[in-house]
Image 1 (cartoon, one colour):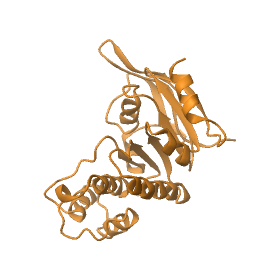
Image 2 (tube, one colour):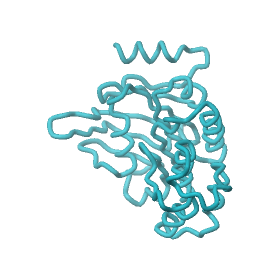
Image 3 (cartoon, rainbow, N blue to C red):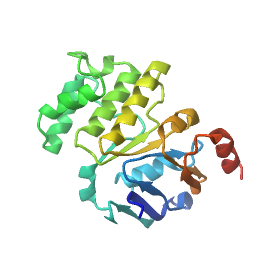
Length: 229
């Protein structure tokens, strides 16, 4: 029997009369990378915000690890949605220290996650002085602080150069090996094909396709066909 870490059942979000997420039911298998695809404005970020409690669903339900989602589940979820929220006048360590104190985590965890994302040698450099790629990695470090079982990354390669993308790819691949389930939203199809085990394609708020990645499959053609259907 398939074990899913996260499922949504008929999840819907409306703003006034506008339906942004429309009756979406996805299944995310445990210890895999799930690639959430869709053109800009398709509803990906809104869906992810509902999974992390930033938005309340209008209808439908979220099942996490076999039970209905509640705010208690946030302790098992780490997320980087859109751009990382950082204090520009604080160092990488200080940024994480603020978050660690809020979560009542030991300060030793900070060095662990900085090492994981390759930022252990930033020293006294302020967050505002970090490159865009380093800020992205610091945002991921922040998401990893609480030892999440589910990690949600929204367009994590945005603004990264090819070397930064390669480093991030290795990092994401290591997560599932360490028992983390990952939902990765991206519009870079080549990256998703290299990283994801399963994909879901959203268009106009609706889930148009869900399935296992096939290495021989032309993902770009599949995406275009589904979006233009």
